[in-house]
Length: 192
Image (cartoon, rainbow, N blue to C red; front, side):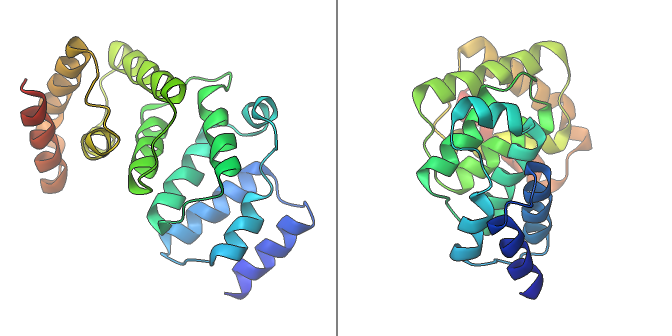
């Protein structure tokens, strides 16, 4: 509790960088320690207030870690904070990695957050890019299998559904039981 309080104090003094905030929230979430709404709001006050500065200040990995941590803690931030985090991942100069994208979608689904249509399109475009250039790992695929139906992103184009289902089936031998069940559920829901 004292450490979370000290971090909030540093945030108030504007001494935390985006990476510091992301790492702190990631660590708190891994410890399953909820710092409370007030401390969380203070930590998230370090986010830039304009989308174009959010995309420049936050690396995709930092924003993905914050969204994942918020999902673990099941703490939905203020709307402006969510907009800045999504601007950082959708408008940033760097493409998302498979783990970043799956963490983002998992965090959003866990928070029961419905992204705007432009944000959905940007995230689906990132998924399309990842599916066309690489084989995704079993952990990322399992997170996607859980998150996509909850975000109502089952409206992916049919060829993309097929590619995602094929990737899940190819990764099945390396999946744990939960990942395998989630992937099979995805394949069944898509009718692939």
